[in-house]
Image (tube, rainbow, N blue to C red; front, side, top):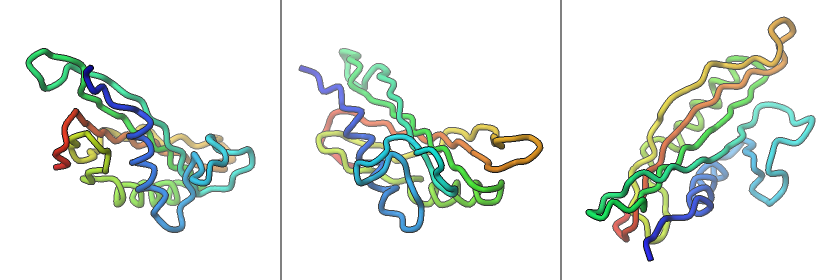
Length: 145
């Protein structure tokens, strides 16, 4: 049976990197608390979501064993400066890192794009969210490099 990878394994490996960064609240909560941002949460914080593509793999059979994970990190700050600082903190943790996912060969985490900043209110702005998207590609194999 082909190794198609597990989205949860990839998510846990990336979240472990983010949880290890001191002073930044990350959702879903590391301790098994809220999986989404709780009502009344005070910025700054980041909320992380994952989606998987399964493009044709690197084998002659063309099986879809390759897994491309998109990591959506929503940086929420009390203002533009705070949101940008969170973006920088996240980049410092994720960019060019190879996460540990047993049985998978990994490329380094790469930056894909940033979405337009989203202030909560155009007149009386209370928070700003900047969403950055990172990409992690893996495929079956034990070579971690």
